[in-house]
Length: 468
Picture 1 (cartoon, rainbow, N blue to C red):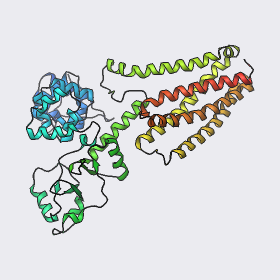
Picture 2: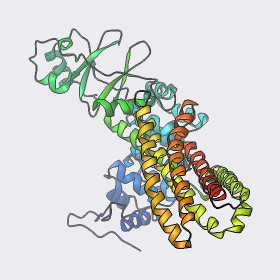
Picture 3: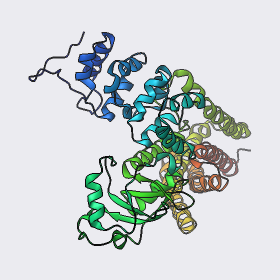
Picture 4: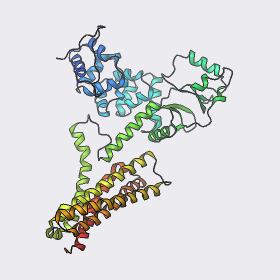
């Protein structure tokens, strides 16, 4: 048994993370033992003051049956914001084990955007059961957030904002801020809204504090201010934050009424999630797959793309079968053909990755598409010529047949040019068709480069080496 050693101040010694930044195995064992023994005192000393990110990593490190028990033992000392830091699968398992009363009590003290994030993936029946345990005012605020479309700014915004009328002075606004206890935990600016809650403008906090008290706040409103619609796609909002270096942005409804604020901490999470999804999808992995998923979930999720890849492999193999007679006459063709196809696949994947990412971030559009396409084609030609010379020399020397070097050199040029073309054209075509290029591009591009690589190499060999 690993026991926590008393620190000089009498509390339990904690080493939360190891030298690599991962949650410390010894610390996890201490917490696990406290949960096993139902030692509430030790458990509170170990985890009650943890940051939500550290607590989230700890929860994921514990066994599945220990997670809900830890939450129950901690009671009101458990910070439910930690559930926003864990994998979706882990969070759903925990919520399934907790009573609606416990969940309702836990989300009651959270920021609204965090509470919505925790509840949004639950079944409607479970969601309704939890909401029914809240007060009408709390339920209304959460339901408003849940009513916005999934993936919209309305789901991620913080509805608690500081808004003042345009006829107030700087002095009145400062006095209001000093005297009001129920303010958001962090804020960077003051919003100005008319009596009907229509958004008028934004006053940065530093500008407010530098201005004399008699000045009207409406005179401090910034002219060039980016406003987010509650129904805007959250990834589009994230790109706006990146483009204009925003820290916060007001959120309005379709009538222009101020309904919330988006802050940079939420946007950082969105950017991280989007990047994570793109990487997974480019590798043929479901964007929803988490490291905590079961073997069955992972196997079923990956089967689809592996099946598509198998079909693509049969298509490539059928090209090889077309040249069965030629392969029988010259074994070197069978040895060298995969080299051409693999080089084409690598080149296409490089181009495709850049194209997909540029499409996802909005960097690739009609204004620069032609320039990007020309650049990739020129790169394909240059690499094709360079690798043609290298492979021609190696193949000719290896098999003692200079003509075979010419064949593979020509095939390499053709394949790398087509690879560049496919790496750009396939993602663009899928995007135009309304299909996420990150999900499907890889399979199509690989199939094209394999077919072209095999066909060009074996076809050129048939013509130049007179193998037909």
